[in-house]
Length: 188
Image 1 (cartoon, one colour):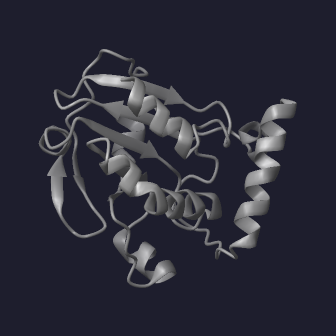
Image 2: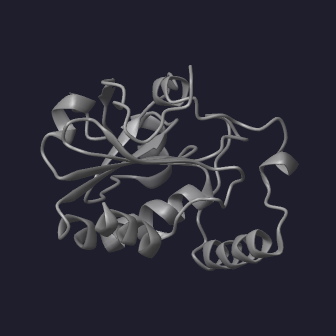
Image 3: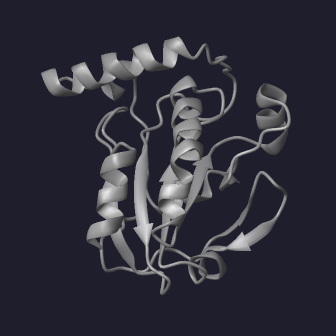
């Protein structure tokens, strides 16, 4: 599938959330001015756990901007519950074990872990800072599900399914942070 771009329609995919609800993209994007779809790896990824916790902490800043967020994981409801217990966040997690979003949006994985790592001084500094923040929180790592070398991607979609912002990461850290993401929403 081709990479999607700003101005195109986001695919109208059907999905199941961690809470057990089934929706379509068209159905959910009509509810808010902006919808963020953050394509991550899987719940056993400590960086993903960190980003999910950060989204939960900042979520009211998104809702204040008439924006909703969906985190897309290659995890099943059972694996999320198995690692996190009765997991509660103020936004929906899309359980995409079939990798439908990844395939339809052409969000690729790298061949090796080394290919997934940043190489610029800025990227390495950002990676080191995030590694320290993740280590301080003692997240539990879990393997055995999802694509270990998956790169992230981020999409902001309007209520008409038009893509307002599309970002395909070139390495594991190449994704806007929460303040950058909120600024992006403000500029749309």
